[in-house]
Length: 79
Image (cartoon, rainbow, N blue to C red; front, side, top):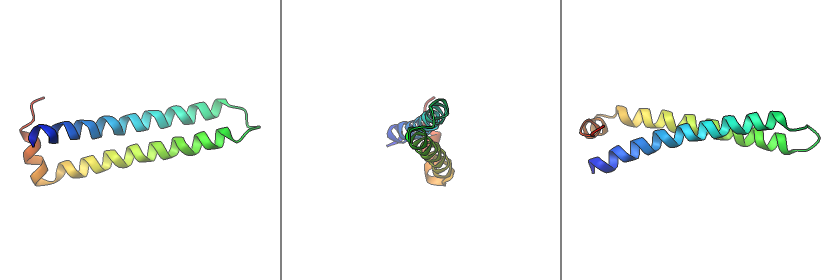
């Protein structure tokens, strides 16, 4: 159980950062496209959704780590 909890927390943190990076990249790409099409609006919407999802995942991970039961389990992780 402990090894899977450690891997799950690492996966949650890495995926949250990945969502934020992809969202930032999408917003940046949307700024480079011409405004004649609807593609920039779609990319900005997807980018902000991705950034929000990453931030929500990171906040959720921090809240879960603060729970006493999970915290005790994570103390046994080997870094």
